[in-house]
Length: 125
Image: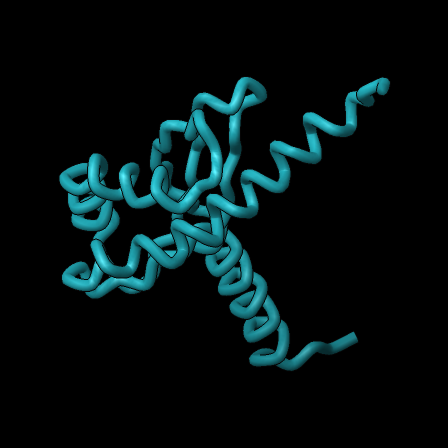
């Protein structure tokens, strides 16, 4: 049987989705005291499946407090993930802050303020 190059990429894509789903269920237990809404926005698994960057979006809370809590509980979080994933070798997770939602909100506010400025003054031709 010949393998195609699509198969490994498909496997990585499925694994990324699965890790994102599982961490979405695991993390709230550890972050309940941070008073922040934390979502797993993206997961990037390396081609050799040894490492996974987990991008988190933090809304309504202190980023530093969230990441400090995650760092303090990293061993337990990794263990929870290891128990849930049906694989021999589990990628080692590393959390990263995803600032794209904040950037998008900032751009939206800028556009809104431009539109408000356009409509606030009378335009004469």
